[in-house]
Structures are given as C-alpha cells and as structure tokens.
Amino acid sequence: MSREEYEEYQKQLVEEKMERDAQFTQRKAERATLRSHFRDKYRLPKNETDESQIQLAGGDVELPRELAKMIEEDTEEEEDKASVLGQLASLPGLDLSSLKDKAQTTLGDLKQSAEKCHIM
Image 1 (cartoon, rainbow, N blue to C red):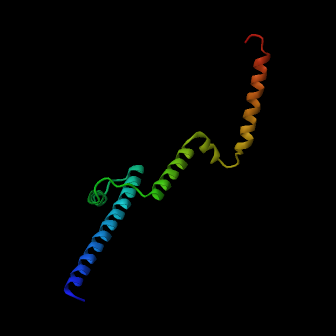
Image 2: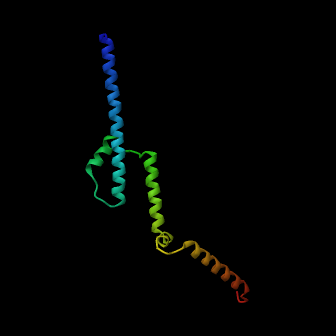
Image 3: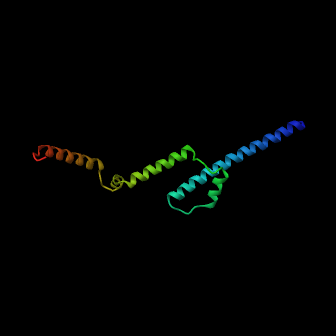
C-alpha cells in the first residue's frame, strides 16, 4: 500500500467513524426524547442528561415513525379508558351490546310515544 492509498484509507476511516458517531448521537437523542415524553406524560421530574443529549443532536429531534405510532396508540387507548364507555367496558359482568340494544329499543319506544302524543 502506497502512502497515498494509506492516507485515503485513513481519511475514509475517519469519515465512517464520524458518520457512525452522528447516527449514534441521533439514536441517543431519540431515546432521550421518548423518555422525556413519558416523563411529561406521567409528571415525573426532568432529567438533565436527557436534555443535554437532545441538545447535542441539534435540539429538534423527531421520534422514529414506529415509536411515534406506538405512543399514539397508547394515547388513544388511555383516552378510550378515560371515557365513560371505556369505564363501563372495564366493569366485570357488564354486556355493552345488550345495554346498547336496550337503549336503542327504549329510544325507539320514546319516539313512537312522542309521535302519538297530540300535545306535541
């Protein structure tokens, strides 16, 4: 290997190392963003290490699509559980489909009786 080839090889190694380091820093920042998201969500104290990792990556780090999708699904599930129907569904021994059928039948009966009413 000549001197020129060796220098080119060394230069290439340095560039590859810089690329790997940049990707590693980006991944660390993505993980830190995810952790800080969950800290905000569950009202946990902030971590300065995570904040510094995000700043090292440039400050504006986006989560990978897969992680963002997982967070969105978790949020939707929690919103469903927080709703009245979500709370009813979690009660043991409660059949929502029969309850829904009864409610629709009652509503239909009320509409029929309202149509027969001469005052309205």
